[in-house]
Amino acid sequence: MSQALKEAIKSLVIQDIYLRNSNTIVTDSFEPKYHEKQDSFGLQFKHLVEKAEVLELESDQGVQQNLLRVFLDVGFRLVDSEAPSEEGSEEEFYVQVEAQYVAEYTMKSELSKRAIDEFALENVSYHVWPFWREYISSQCTRINLPKIILPTKQLASNRQMTSCD
Image (cartoon, rainbow, N blue to C red; front, side):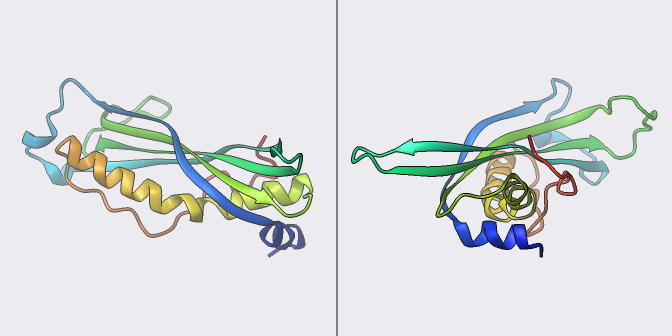
């Protein structure tokens, strides 16, 4: 673990995690409740840190507090794993569920851009992941799709980037 990440972990205190927006699409040609080949489904996942921003907030008493907000985009697609796909083409899907979560952290001290970026790319996913797992489970129930169980943790796929502007 880098010194910048240690610095961020020491300075940041989680305040809130919330769903900012979401979208669920079931294609017209697909009826989840009556689909015959349940075992032919393939899954594709989306998991990216969209951005991180620091807000300067002032309380009624005039006290200034910095707040780190990290926007995490997640999603999954249910695809036909038996259908041939051409390289570079958009794969047909049955169901697509996407969401954007915001994780907010108060800052005890000022942090470098590197510390914020490393924290956003390495740690935020662990905090948001339980909310996303629950959302997927409830959406599957709502649309009569067999339950999809995600692993207990996952890191954002863009975590190797040096910046999350």
